[in-house]
Length: 408
Image 1 (tube, rainbow, N blue to C red):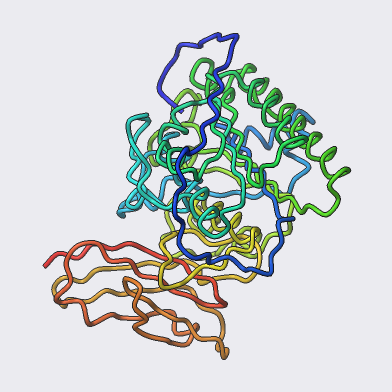
Image 2 (cartoon, helix red, strand yellow):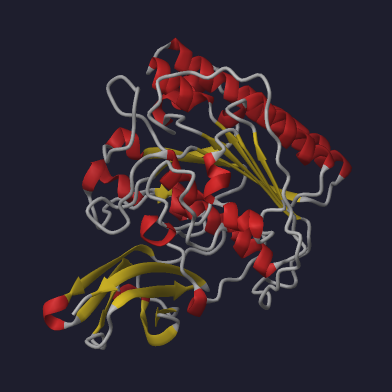
């Protein structure tokens, strides 16, 4: 989370439930109107929980609750050497998780509570599609809610709580909301693994922190089980994920673009598609031992929106991630700007020849449709364009986007 080596012992937590006092006009819904309100989602953040150390804890039966979910490796930090590259720190990491976008869109490039997310958040996109939905954000590290202060002010987050690094506060408040509340989306953030890592590295205290947070995850899952006993028609998606890994060999720090710091995980209670379960064996960027062939933390927000039945409009789409459930979008989408020839080259890994076309949009305008197996499109009509340009490639009604900067 942050580079502090001081542990703070706080016995009380501050709860701030904020609701917009003025009506905020929302545009027409882009949700699937046939989807009922039975879809719900619980997103659990486990700050700084190292993938390999979690695997060790699972093997030792120290993390049975997270271990009971379908767990797969993923990555954070964007693609190094590109505009998506971001520090493997909590501010950028949680903002990516809660927007489906990298730093070139969300602009939260550090652990700084004064920064404000600039990309459409998970909360905003859900509320714009279905204004009646209720959202809750309960965080141990208050900077997360600070970075999303505009979402709170606009009413996209109905209830926001800061627990001041007291994880049990998060477990108790989120557990109560799950069992007795009316939220459709609950984000619960735990902090202890990150704090233990900064203070002790990969010492026994770190594994104890994993064990403790796993027990608190179990508290939430038990609350959810009790709720489902009284609300049997509700369909809950559960995702558990960290914001970054830890730096080897000792685990005290993070922030750089090393394999260990970039490696994360996504654990779900639902069957996932190939984006999570079948990593690309030959990713376009082979760096970090093929890590970029795995899913990324940018895939979490699109997954939750997919579960809620939010149907994305390709012309308005601006997320870098792909949903991990349902139909599969194009994978390994990359962009390359060629200033000398005034071209932008889009490439992706397409399937074998088939009838389904790939649709390509530039700043909301449909510019081409090509066969998926072609795997490439060259935009030759950019000589008069300057500034940021959003490209979207869609197949199976699943869009994925990339932001490029044009300078002539």
